[in-house]
Figure (spheres, rainbow, N blue to C red):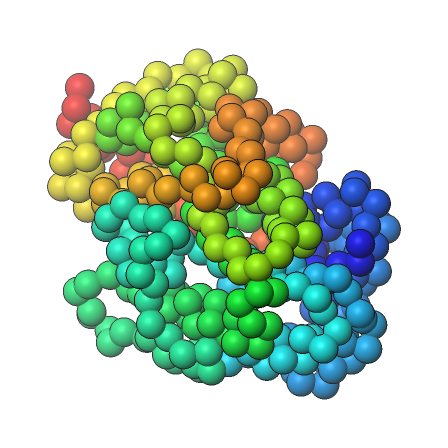
Length: 342
């Protein structure tokens, strides 16, 4: 099997490349070469996906049985469409890593693969879906851009040659967003630790290696595949996640559970100041049964926590990314909230 990975230097892309090489496949990666580390054994091609001449030069390295696209998160649908058109003659199947943010109802309501998606044309520019400053409702710009990119992929390759995978939160070794690393470092620091909301609340993070393995499985699928890629509803809880962080770090701290109502009154930013905490009813209500039926396997979250801690303890650091700085409550603010619940 011969595949092309768009991305491949860090986190999900790197996990895809490593998994493909373990299967004995030939792998070409396409990155800008500005960050990350090339996986030994893969052929590296460098260029910019938004430059037509670079995509044309990449196509000359084909053909490939499939392309797995892990690097389109910051590209407009228009850029994705141009790239897919350049690759279509030399690629058999397109596996696109999308997001649950493409759904109209996320994160407000439970979702299945049949839930309606946001509207965006395949040739939309980066400005499509931008909201005016001060907009009081949810920001759907990112979701619309990804929905348009999905349409770009299916427009260029057709329904019979495409797989659309929609993960929620991806954690694991190499994570660059900073959610799990923040919780691990917070557990390590000890003391009274603000634990958000209901301890029994179901959460659905998925391991990066499991997403990568499922994406590789899609290379040999036929027909149009659309799957939500999350842990099963109800299997993992916030308490189980935080206890795993406490255990692997040998923390001497104490989890202090604070209700959603108190946290909302405090004005904390959901999703970022306390990573993984969000009160919207649909954020952890994503049906992944179609992926499970298609062979997706999601390891226990405790294993992801342990392996990420080991990765950090070995001196590894994630690729620098601006989203890292968004995550985590300040110690002073945490103490102030905890003082009110003594």
